[in-house]
Amino acid sequence: MRGLLKRHGVLIDVLVAACLVVLGEAEVWLGPGAGSHRLPYALINPAMALSVAARRRYPSAAGATAGLLSLGAADLLGPPDLPTYALSWLLAMYGLAVWSRPRPFVAAVAAIAAALVASALLGLAPAGFPQFVLSWLVVLVLARFLVGDREQRLQHAERERDLAAREALLDERQRIARELHDVIAHEVSMIVIQAGAERRALGSENTATREVLLTIEKVGREALGEMRRMVGMLRAGASAEPQPGLRDLDALVGRVRESGLNVDISVGGERRDLPAGVELCAYRVIQEALTNALKHAGTAKVTVRLDYRPDELVLEVADDGHGADLGSVEGGHGLVGMRERVALYRGRLTTGRRAGGGFQVLAQLPLQ
Image (cartoon, rainbow, N blue to C red):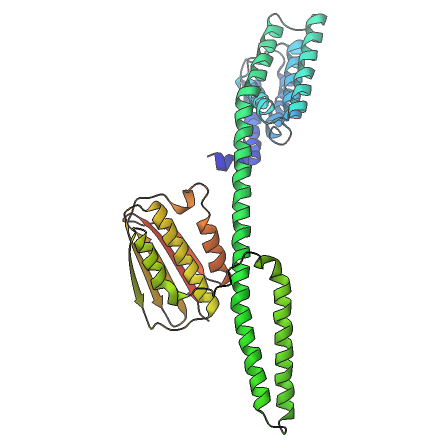
């Protein structure tokens, strides 16, 4: 619910304001609450509702407008017996107390207080109304310190979580960039080496072919140099070890078993060498899924399944435990990295609770 209000709070306020206008006009014209001042309150009611629609974006202005408008209307027309009118005023005051910045909040409260003092000195306010407004100003200030402070702490915590998520996403992208650099650099280096070897093996009569191979060598070396310059900053702290692939999956599963997790692995289809980037992606997804299972699945049994199909590689990591959902673990960003990697290879990633209990990670990586 809080997430819904955060994403669509302004729209919800506009819809609430529209309902308040309709209900308020019905009360003014069909009920006795406005007394003999139906037309003035029929004009004031939309203005009060407008302060509700604007209370998230302009809380201080909306609260001051509602406060001054209600005070002036009570002085000139008398306080009405209109529930929707009072509700609009309360919603605008809540926005003023909770969402205003400190200085605009003080300015709005001071404006309402000054208008109240002027009304009392001029004898315009109805009997008991200044005391009512004054008590509400006290409540407003208390709400500011209680509810407003809590709201600000929650907003600060949300900003910190968003920042942590963005940093995790950036770190994962940097890691992917480093690994891709290793994979692509290896492949391009092989192209350059093979082109050079073939060029040197050709006789002098194959001039055109030798020039083509020389161009391949030159372009390949330039591409390698440019790639190293582009991702050079990401190499700091990167491991010089060769990047893992599915050939290292048994070792990974062995290490996880040693950590106390019961893991079974099955392979379907004809096992074969895949593009290095796809193998690295599959390995990292399985590694992350097993790490999360180790953290949250308890003593569950985990099954790792690889299915080599003609046009895609399907991998699944599923457990039968009752641990936390990966997406709900505080501070966990495992799904972020998985989705980034799988999307890089135009694949699909599905995660979630299994019907019979436990958690499942399913990735489909196209091979064409």
